[in-house]
Length: 341
Image (cartoon, rainbow, N blue to C red; front, top):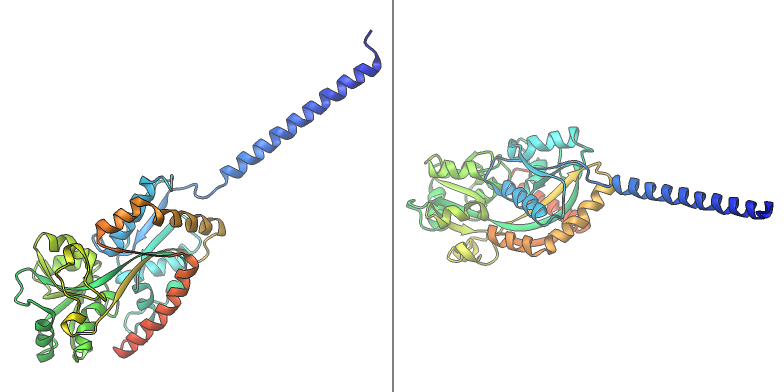
């Protein structure tokens, strides 16, 4: 006979099972909701604030390519070119209109500091209006002429501009007072030439500057070495000097440094990735961890070697400290050149 006592026990057991099941379902739903809320949920845009073919463009494309190939980022990654003012035009937009846009990153190098500190055409915005995420690589400046140019070495160019500073047209892929301009005139400045008298024409990106050189619209260009690697390999240009501390490998192994030629003109071009100034903590932590995995991958090391760069990684915290030091160094250089605001 089924007693009231037994009935009560069965009912209690059933209620307990239902209660536990409900809790389990709530926990599962809560866990799923937590996982679903993770960043990133949308496509990521990585901006190269220049035209195609320059160092920023190549860095942005390599960065997105390897992140996709290694599946470190599963959301779509696209590169967008936004040229203008050697990066200053994009920086103004980013610092004011994209200040919280976690889905938009950009690559940059010394111009983010130079543009903010120079006298002519300066930008009110700099690296302090961003969230520095990581330094990825380093590159070096190159003084370049056409393959059939009469100038065979750096000294021959410097002697020419010493006689008449305005005789030759120098060009670069950034605005006056910006990185390519500094690379172009630094050897002449160190050689005793008044840099303010040298004729410099700016283009939107290294690719356009090389086109100007090959088309006869410039005599010499100052740019990043990696941008001219393929042109050097194809025999279209002659690299007169690089601004590294020692000779580079690969295609540049026979190119002397400026210092080897008696000109103390060293200039390192670092490249890094930045996020918006008000980037969320979740997004910042995600990119710090993801980029750390990226730079340690064999795929990224191979890509860096292929592009002719050197791997030099600084995480977010170290990169920020490095930028503070760079800020002081650029101030000193611009002041010496009479270009500090």
